[in-house]
Length: 117
Length: 109
Image (cartoon, rainbow over all chains, first blue to last red; front, side, top):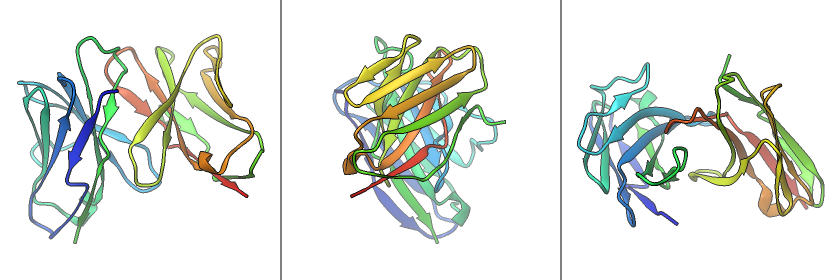
């Protein structure tokens, strides 16, 4: 099956700093990648959808200037949390899909646990 | 009202028990339905798709009632390894997946 990796798997940073999370599709070309956030005991919430080579589409309530998404190649998307605050501490998960996959067929990365102190 | 609602549980059941989870969705335009499993601190993994006619995969049976906008998952002969959070997921025939908050299952010996 299709494999998606994320790096780092966990990160601790200080308030006010920026953190970059990478999402890679290892054995397929990911034309679309999704970024989700999950707080403890809550659902996965879609933050944004990114298509290779174009700007990301953010969900309502997600600050695009705070959560910078770059999908520069067909195998890599990055999420940068800028000026992180403790309330940004969460589990960030990416997923990827491709042309030829069914519309709902997404492959998830293992997630990145971010703790902001 | 949340788009996809689930009883959060936890459901604590002994090994060998049969347990059922329910899920309701609010958007009648929903096209595809799934159950995902998520282990603690891990990514969600697709357990099974849910078809209108109902479908079975080993010990797992999924049902869909479009008229009532209701989805169910039945697990028979529960194993310790079934302990996880089960996520009800809906798709509106686009790329987006809408996740429920999940129902936590704990199977004890």
